[in-house]
Amino acid sequence: MSCILLGDYQSLSRLSIPLFLERISAGFPSPAEDYIEKTLDLNELCIEHPAATFFVRVQGESMIEAGIFPEDVLVVDRSLRAGHGDIIIASLASEMTVKQLHLTPSPVRLLPRNAAFAPIVLDEDDELEVFGVVTNVVRSLRRGGKA
Image (cartoon, rainbow, N blue to C red; front, top):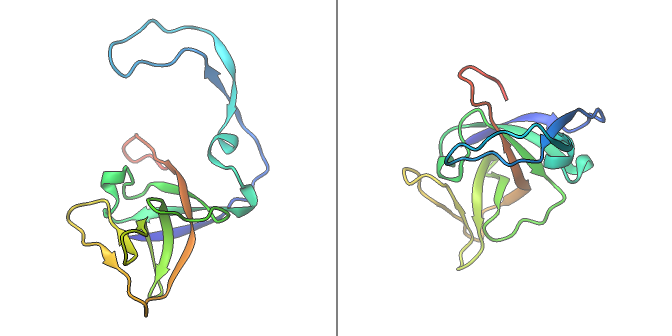
């Protein structure tokens, strides 16, 4: 799995989109309500630390069981300290990757979330550089649509 860097979050523009009070049913349909609770800015929803946030586009299938698919855009926060179980963007042997970080039990491992891929087990000689913690995934559900 590799990542294509899209660039740092620099936009100060805000786009407010209506957020409806009524939740949508993912089971049986319920009548729609025409009541807007407030507006929602996707910047506020997805980005906690704008100065420390960047986006990457995913290439490869090693994280599909975590809901991360090829061409998805990941929102990555550099200010967060990576912990056990976090999905991270890291560099290992000068190659960028997105994997789930496992700190315990030793040794440290970078786990793919696709059974067809093997875990990366780190030893003392490996130089792992964590670039940030993945906080959100942006994906288009339309065929040919771009996130």
